[in-house]
Amino acid sequence: MQKTAAERMPMAKEHSKLLLKTTNRLLDILQELPEVPCGLPSVTTLIKQLNVSRTTVQKLIEILCKKGIARQDGTNKVLLRKPLPSDYFSMEEIDNSKSDIAEKQILKKLSSYELKPGDRFSELELAKKIGSNTVITREALLKIAQSGIIKKHPHQKWEVVELSPSLIDEIAAIRKLYEGYAIQTMQFAAKDDPVWNAFIQLEKRHRTLLKQSRIKLAEMRDIERAFHTTIIKASRNRFLEESYDSVFTLIFFHLWQIEYDKVKIKRVLNQHLAILEALLAKQFNTALKAMEDHLDHAKISMKHVNSLLEKKAG
Image (cartoon, rainbow, N blue to C red; front, side, top):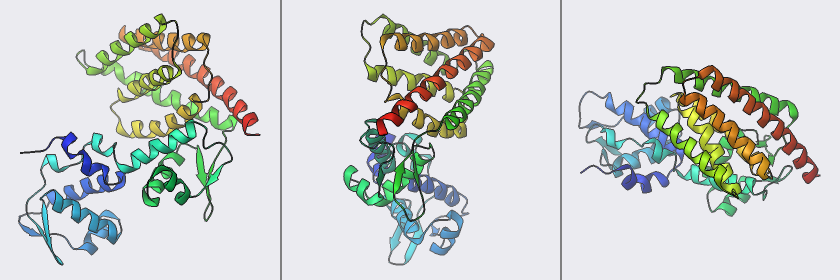
């Protein structure tokens, strides 16, 4: 009986995202072998094919054995069967890997201002604080570093950096490019595409929040993330999604610093609604213009927050 993704999740959480993705690549390679059972490719061959270390290859073989795909008896390694679709790690499993858990813990420290601009720390120090190891912590830090929140010079500690106004301009420009592209692709979405229902549900969430006398900060930040990620996912472009994830990590870090008042919250929610209404009415040019206005407003807000953070750090 095949296990569901939920039942396989414990195995996924034992490993890093990189190892899970590499496992899927290895399964693709094994699919091409002509006959089974047969000997597994040599460790040296796998090192070259996957561009990984010997230690990583051994971990991969252990995963194959746990899945019942291979058997290892000393130095003898045998492929028992070809991989099945259920042997592959799903995106849900990959997104709940040890490095993702570590990443969320680090982002929490950043967003709560426990780690603030100018702070320096080593991988070992941080790993101890989040209850992880240095390999997993390093992988999480490298991903977060793509967003520009942190940086590391060779042979030095990691550092939380401050944003310059010019970098904020660049972020605003790339957001317009990404989200503008996503909106344009929606012109070709079928009537029964799940994205339309996702937009309807988002519209309802916005209207519900606007009716509340008091909106919690966490609710505001959750809906901000849901709104933008839903639009990006509608593009059906995984490379755009992964790239935007790094950009939004940086934006989300700043959102935690914003002291939203009732006026700001209503302004943002109404901007979102204008975009959603235009999309649901299939008025894509109107939606595009509304998105550009919203992102221009977000850029001004980020610059204001950045100036406050600089004063706070000083």
